[in-house]
Image (cartoon, rainbow, N blue to C red):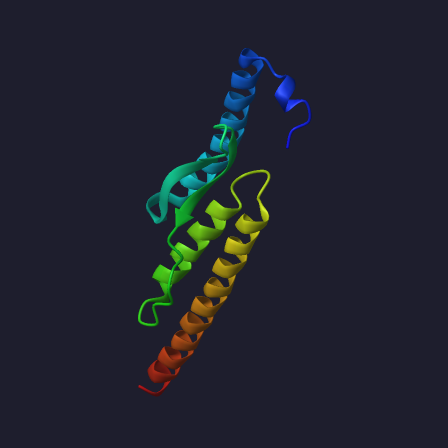
Length: 125
């Protein structure tokens, strides 16, 4: 609850709501811009008085593609970039980035293992 919220006149209340909306929208727009085709629409959540209290942009978390780990690596980097785009990432943003970093590491390991096998195959050819 914002102190003095009930003491706002209508103009102050509307100005406050607009300020909150702009702040939240700017944060979410940074996610959206970096997320590209993996990012969904910007959603702004409001309380019962219509005051913006939060927002989110859904993002498609990559799955491991063992046949082409480069796709997974590219998408994981996009998710990380999107999650960390705002100057003030939330705890949820950091969680998403962490999950994408785990997927990235797994995909890089698959790629490295694949390259080792291909190198051995070429060596004996």
